[in-house]
Length: 352
Ligand code: ADP
Ligand code: MG
Image (cartoon, rainbow, N blue to C red; front, side, top):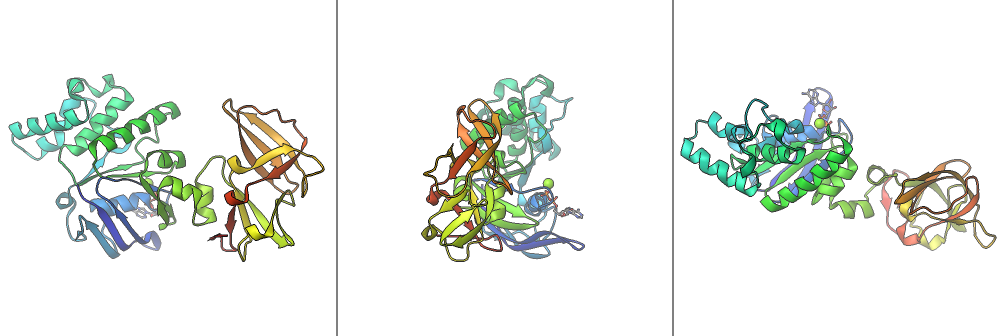
């Protein structure tokens, strides 16, 4: 087990900069996630770690040692295959031992190693079964066992569960998190699903066009996004972003949001409020600013999404339970100033 670092790594394909001056330190034993939209460079980062690609600039380090010139085999980083693909004509046990058989390791060593990994992953009783007779969660454990049987310094997964249906995905990611915690092995994980990234990662890196925009724990990035881009990438419904004006008081959303001016940092041009922080009340004369109109209500059972019309844009509020809210009624919007996010003209976060 070892930490993995990039120092100013750039990888180009012709004119495309797939990875742009990336630096990070993944700690040994960490569940580290790369999250970003398609084509943002996530898979290229994994290939650079595996040694399937070489950086044009910068340095890749494993366990503190430079590995730019070390072959993939010499790096001993394991990839868990896409969609947890197992060989269907082999039993689970044959799948797990395959990487060792391929390397012509003595049978006694193979058996000891398979037993050890199967024990850690609690799959000893499944080894005689073909993959078709295993549940999704069991297949995942077998696929991970096959990657870990070589005792790699880290294991990598590239969007491994995106092809599963929503229910199975939820179940699988809980399993995955539990497995990683039990093993204590460095796991580097790629996903384009924000909820998945937030649910599994100890820490995550947010990618945009080959660049790492922010690194931190999911909750830290959610609460303190470095920019408007990061703020809108995490959370569903997405953060509401409005233009802000400051003349005597801070106004946004066509005057439906009014805040004391002392809440705003210098140079604020945009204001962000997460749907769960947007407070919606029936309009009354005591309220400051202008009313918004209830545009649509989506009752989702445990919570309700309310879409509000400010006149020029739509905002979304996430409310607990099933509040009684009349369509087309006038409502007052507000937010605890401490929960408001402020952005500068370039989309950078400003601190109050
Ligand atoms: P992601 O995994 O986030 O979807 P990738 O790392 O696959 O992103 O790709 C990043 C960028 O590099 C994209 O613009 C992609 O088209 C380009 N790219 C990736 N691999 C190659 C390749 N082998 N040849 C040419 N361009 C590539
Ligand atoms: Mg990819």
